[in-house]
Amino acid sequence: MKTNENRILLFLFLLLCVVFMSPYTHMVKAEENGISSYENIQSDWSEWKTTSCFKYLNYRVKKGETAKKWYIEFKNNYNQNISMSVTIKNGFGGDRSTIKSGETKKSYYFTDVEYASRIDFVVDKVKFNDTSWSGPYAECDY
Image 1: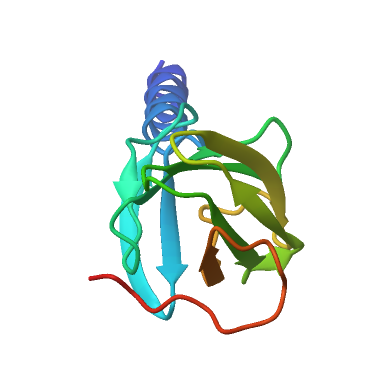
Image 2 (image 1 turned 180 degrees about the vertical axis):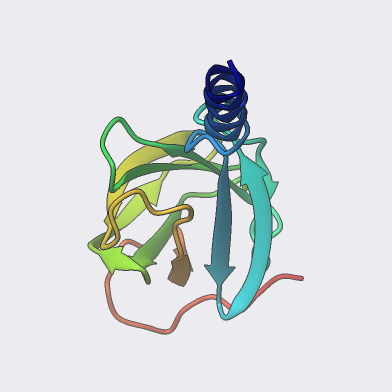
């Protein structure tokens, strides 16, 4: 009888561990121009956050459908188009794109760790109303 009670207690303990340590809660580290910020997110989209360097460039993140996939969505709240580079620090890939004023852009990226609990990225080489790849680039505005 004692053995069955121990098995039931062990099962309940493991079940609680699975529920409360679920991979659907993630720590996300966002780095823009070397300044880091942390946020807890779920498998749904996080709240919109302001980048640490450009006060009208917002982002949010979401864990993707596969183990290494993440989505990052940027929103341009400037009254001019913004071109920028995004580089993934704990994975591979990145891109350079232009977001029109008042619009959003969503892209997916991959970490190099299966079931990564966060994605590290850098936003840099920012330009306004200029889609060329070469500098000069915009300075932080706060």
